Figure 1 (cartoon, helix red, strand yellow):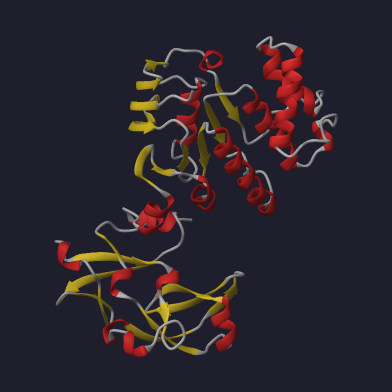
Figure 2: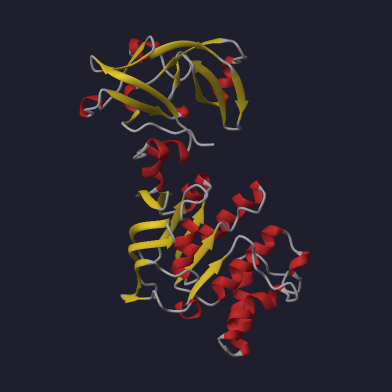
Length: 362
């Protein structure tokens, strides 16, 4: 039976460097939780503290109502999957998956049954006698998953397990991991810097920056209601504008956009963000009679990028580079070309308002 895992005032210091700063979190049994953030934000450090590979500087890690700070990794009964697979090169797929079971002195008949179950779950039936060097990267990662799950851990921790694989294999393995988690009902804690991966997999996402939790919520919440301009850019893509409040609108150069919720902001200067898919193309994705005149602009298409289901068009608003995404079918219909004129609409309720200045991610 899975148990609740609690991080209570958890910190990690390396001398004067604060890698994780006083974070708190309750992870429910059977939950799929993703830690998401840029490199160096502390997400892997948290994972290593949970597994016992890293000592806790302050605070507590509580599992099943017991503080486990001083419990050695082998006694925590947690499974872990690394980015590097960490397979034994001189062992077959069968032997790699069976390794943890043999260490636990399980009877051979049970080992054979459990390994066969793992091979089926991970789609590796027929590959059991191959060595890691004879497998693709995606297959090796499936072996690592099978080995970690074979010991029936209550909690499975995954440290950027797909980042070394190519894009198509990553998408396929996401489905494998999600299906495994749902079928087995185990708690999974997943570390990634890939926002698409986190949104696709998680029940809840923890956004980290500079060793702190900046937002915790469902994928829908962190995408649709980002609490800061950093999150608005890191999770997905956003267009940003800075301006002054004036007569209930945001003044930006010659433009004055009506922005919903502006009256609740006390600051005179604000920073507003809007997702590319929420910008409308007048006469294409919205009729002009449904638009507020103040929130319409005329501009020119600069760069056109075909992204499959959508087409992303870059345009300039004053000196700011902006993006609009329109469905591929609509683009095909209008046959827009570079330097063509277009009229765009920014719906008042599609803006997010921030009072802190956004620092562009690199």
